[in-house]
Length: 432
Image 1 (tube, rainbow, N blue to C red):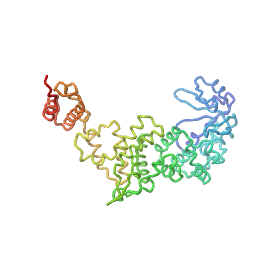
Image 2: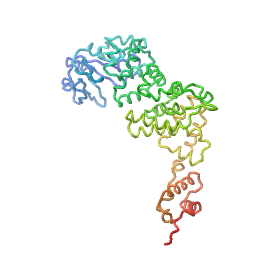
Image 3: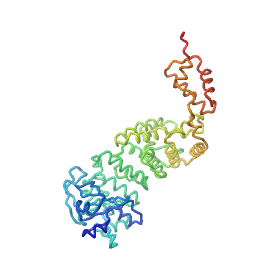
Image 4: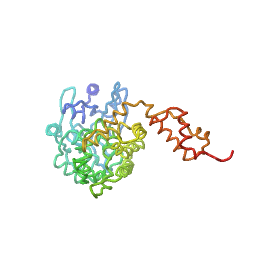
């Protein structure tokens, strides 16, 4: 594709993150192209194109099964809304580099000439493992306050340090992230929490003051001490950082479930004979719902995250549960996420995985019908037996399912006999 643009008389270069990743020895996830061709010229050179940002000179070119974002070199003027430039001027490669966020993202590469083009010192900063804003850090952050969170994400992801003036500007302008839409903050937090070194990212969010702005409930975990016998690792924020780092292949909902699983501890902390956090799972579930609503998570994602927080303490008692209670827990639609949360919760504290292995072995040994047995009776059956419809129906049918899960009964006849035996006085005795 670059060759096609060059053969038509244009300059065309790989740009941004793909160049950074190549220099770091990583395979880029995608390739962005910057060019001096206008959007109209790009569209005229390729059969399949989609204009996604004509104002900003961005065209998506489809080549086979691959998509490439092709952007015209530009410079930006003013950012009144703290996100979008007030005006865009098509420019050259140097001006295009100077408008970008961090030096490591401001590099170009000419794949035909095998030449790196660096106007901003990005190659040096990659070698020095530094996150540095291009030009004035305060100006870059003022243009788009989401860059405050992006700085932390890149620093954590690559294990780089924030350059002094960049970090100073970040700390000074943390409040500006409040101007960013909830959806963009949510998406950036999801990238942070599902990326490498997410525990370090949480530490940086706290250290820079960003956590206090975007997730004040999580900020309260810092300094919230726990009983050393159960949590030798330290306060709740330290525990949460370790749990995040222990995650394997996290999804956004699982990562947020881990982040928020102990969010109810600071408001419930009390001391008597020892430190206690009574009902912190229930209080945490309500806080998680409020946080997810504020960040505008989709309803299904919110329900999953809240459920992870609400149920996480149940796994501490799985070996003492009745068979029916355990089987109901293990048939949760999100059981694998629940188990992963329990695993990292243990690893980040006492390290005892006995209950985790008990659950995984139990789950592996059960057939689906054993935890989701076919229904033996319905409400119509209860009516036929002479019961009056009402709340008692749920109680009876739940008892029947309990008996199935406990392997007390297996047939419809067994179920009918159980109901007649255990609920004899609840039948309708009105004269016919």
